[in-house]
Image 1: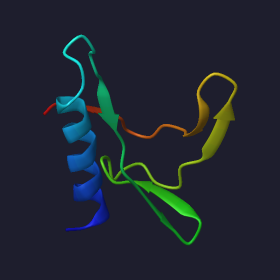
Image 2 (image 1 turned 180 degrees about the horizontal axis):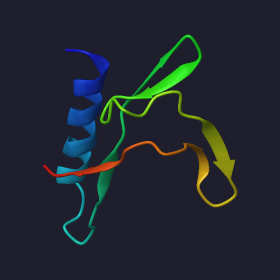
Image 3 (image 1 turned 30 degrees about the horizontal axis):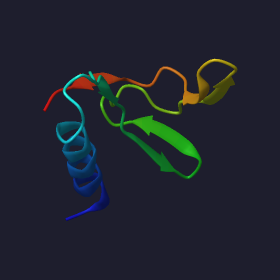
Length: 71
């Protein structure tokens, strides 16, 4: 099993084993970085994306598609 399936299993196992009083929201993005270009794998029309930094958000990829996921 690759790193992404293992990471997803670990994340959702941790959520399942946590207190029922806690509520989680999980949002994902998937990008490919190749030859210093960033491509959005959830929306192939978005390519050559830029890395930005914000005091509130921290470091992020501008205009990257984010999708909410459920278990």
